[in-house]
Length: 225
Image 1 (tube, rainbow, N blue to C red):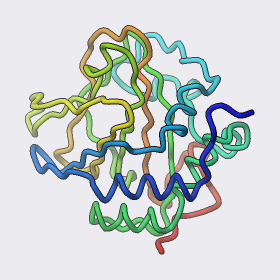
Image 2 (cartoon, rainbow, N blue to C red):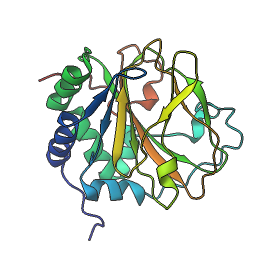
Image 3 (spheres, helix red, strand yellow):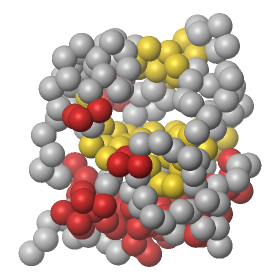
Image 4 (cartoon, one colour):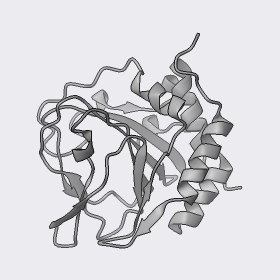
């Protein structure tokens, strides 16, 4: 018996669509959306129990690409190994979900590609204030943090002067979405991580994305229903 049960892609898409439609928009200090109950519970737990060891990165110097070989993307190979990853990726690849992202965020997504990264931060991890590159059509951080201190592990939000003005919730199975722009400064200030800070970064990226080995479906561009 598979534990936990893996929902099919249609159920994942339906559940996620409900969360996206109910997203709460905030325009301060820049436009972003907060989501709750993002994934079916079985799928969220399924990601947590994936047999993927947190990477030992050492000093990341405040960036993610210190050693890309140690990063975990939902590639075709990972989807083939783990049904949980396959169902999740197939759900977010669906044309009706693409349309919802397009309508919610006011962006054009047709012809882009799905990029999903599973991140497991351990003590010492941090991210300097930065803006995502414009090749990302949107950025979504989905929090799968557990433990008594996990509520403190949200994303730090900065104003145009790079002063911290807020921090997102890291409640389990919540998410934040924003569209990269000139003022979308965010990061993760150094703080204790007792346990593992688990999250997923989900993007649709432009068709000219260079790192094709990071894409969930490198031969299937996004179609909008």
